[in-house]
Amino acid sequence: MANIISDETIEYVGILAKLELSDAEKEQAKKDMGRMLDYIDKLGELDTDGVEPMSHVFPVQNVFREDMVTNSDTREQLLSNAPEQKDGMFVVPKTFD
Amino acid sequence: MSDILDMTAVELAAAIRAGKTTAVEATEAVLARIEEKDKELNCYVTVCREKALAQAEAVQAKIEAGELTGALAGVPVAIKDNMCTEGLLTTCSSKILGNFVPTFSAEAVLNLEKAGAVIIGKTNMDEFAMGSTTETSAFGETKNPWNTEHVPGGSSGGSAAAVAAEECFYALGSDTGGSIRQPASFCGVVGMKPTYGTVSRYGLIAYGSSLDQIGPLAKDVTDCATILEVIASHDEKDSTSVAREDTDFTKALVDDVKGMKIGIPKDYFGEGLDEEVKNAVLQAAKMLEEKGAMVEEFDLSLVDYAIPTYYTIAAAEASSNLERFDGIKYGYRTPDYEGLHNMYKKSRSEGFGEEVKRRIMLGSFVLSSGYYDAYYLKALKVKALIKKAFDDAFAKYDMILGPAAPTTAPKLGESLTDPIQMYLGDIYTIAVNLAGLPGISLPCGRDSKGLPIGLQLIGDCFQEKKLIQAAYTYEKGRGVFPSAVKKA
Image 1 (cartoon, rainbow over the protein chains, first blue to last red):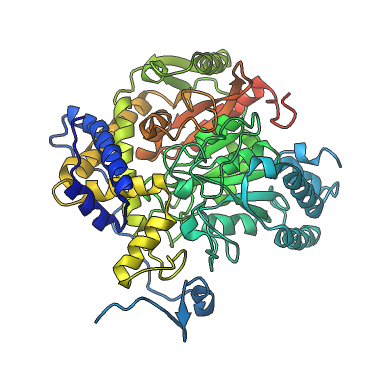
Image 2: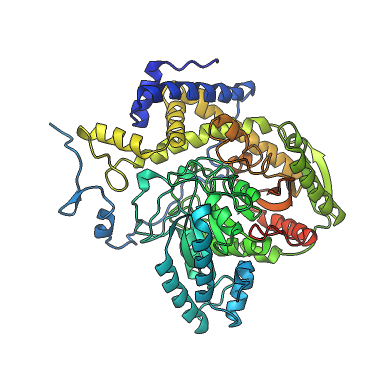
């Protein structure tokens, strides 16, 4: 296997991805990601010098519209999906000390 | 009417208009079929019986009053569970959205409702559309109606299986790398992914936003074109939506391929392709040739690079799109946590399944500082080369013909142990999404186990009509495809 994923890398990816992995899951993730990257490395066979990266297949740039309110007040329905709510607001864990 | 479930969507709407049956009768028939079959098949995550019957009554009244006259008015439909439906549970087949009730409906769903559709329920799928078998669903796998030991394909497996099992008259699916066309192929139904931007993605829960498109799963090409005509619309709420004038797709239901140029990529018929699939697909090409099309082989090139390009881009976009699931505004929140960040991490780790976590991690990695150029940017450059290879092909041909998948439906439990092996099954569908092209899959035979084989036609951007015309012509020549319910 060409790509060896270190413990540090998996820790770092866990932080970026906001995922908490058990030790067994970390080992599996190292293997899976290593294999996947070995496979993706195939793209290195292609010479892409001077090729413009293509993010969108059509030549669409900025799409503008008037900034008008078109939706109605759905606060109650929106809040009803929240895991925890109080006085018309989302309840979140304590963020500052 | 005992044979009501045999009807196509267009036939049913005509029968309702003619007063031979009603939207309510059709809805009751579908609900009875679900009652009878769905415990075994598990096509649906949610069936909204009462709501559907009430909607059917309201639609029937409008049809009788002459207010609804469209080609799909009164016909029951199933919606993939990654499209928002106001007031109706929408889970993406994930624990993290297990209790999510949207406050609005996806634009494609609204377009159907305006045309008089009756929504029966929400269909099972691979979690967040990540998978090719519908086995990564948090709510159990869906089984293939042709043989319940096999998968229905994925990720729109519930939608494809529901159409095949006559648990609805048609369904909506979404296709990011083949998620409409491959399950259509495995379940013996017609599935179409339109040109990127043809159907609004507003209200479609995003996986890979630059690749995702909504499309129909239907019993035949006529239904497919009719549904696409209804759901296609320019929508200001989706900035990638394209204003098209040529969405009168049913005009292309013409039995004629004379003079059409069809290219067969040699690279689609090499190693890994099942012999029975190959023969059935080449047989279909031969029929189109006999009907007057010009068919020849050519080298498409870059075929082997499509899958690594796709998984880099799709994972990158998924890692970004799925950041919104944080246990604050909706969805699952872990019961035990210490502080905000621990709550995020635990909610996400407990709420997402294995395949979703795998792709979020890969995506976070390829976008991270130090690896962005080597992986993500490289993939975007190869995407440009793949698009160019298709441009070159469409300079010579009206369409490309090949298989939808290298095999027929695998057995349940055989695919998830080796993710890369599963990804390879997407080889014929995935490049179509990278290049934003339209593609259709329709049944062209069955293998020795009796499982359906799918023929795929790929067109240049905005050339759905050519695909529909060729598919319709093939279907006329092929004759009626057997039903999964009767197996004959």
